[in-house]
Image 1 (cartoon, rainbow, N blue to C red):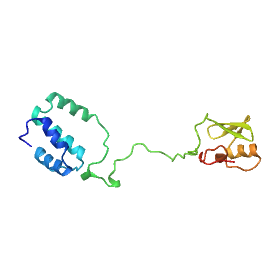
Image 2 (cartoon, one colour):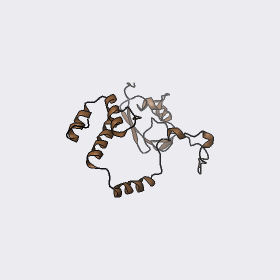
Image 3 (cartoon, rainbow, N blue to C red):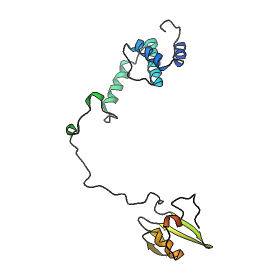
Image 4 (cartoon, helix red, strand yellow):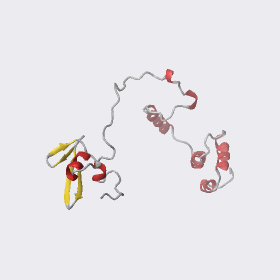
Amino acid sequence: MANTTSIQEQLAAMRAMSPGQLREQYRELFGEESRSGNRQWLYRRCAWRLQVLAEGDLSERARAKARELARDVDIRVRPPSQARLAPSQWPAVTRSAKQRVKCTADARLPMPGTQLTRKYKGRLYQVEVLDGAFAYDGQVYQSLSAIAKVITGGHWSGFLFFRIADPRKEVR
């Protein structure tokens, strides 16, 4: 593709290439094999290289700024493939948790402060979700089932009574 007249024509030709053809183009432009077979990545890298060859690379000032910014980056997303360390070689941790924190809240429950409402036998009942408890009729209860028992007189799952467990199912 060295004899094509413009970058746009070369880019248009590369858009129609298969990943295998783009790998070959990458090999021609960079003088080495690509480690990636991802078509989009290969296209972008080859397009960038064509632009560099035609219009020139970054200025020295821009390169210096990029090096400066790269020095400030502390986080590495993945370790280099050659330098994976065994757990015994991991650096010492300066801080660690002293104990595990248990999440006791049921994921089905709404946030504290939410009002749960249920119409039962013609009457509307409202319960406020508190942090670790529930308020109904001026009293605090530890579970929705306790409130459902007070309202109905029989044992109910609180989640089912207030239609939290599965809102698609019909509750009597």
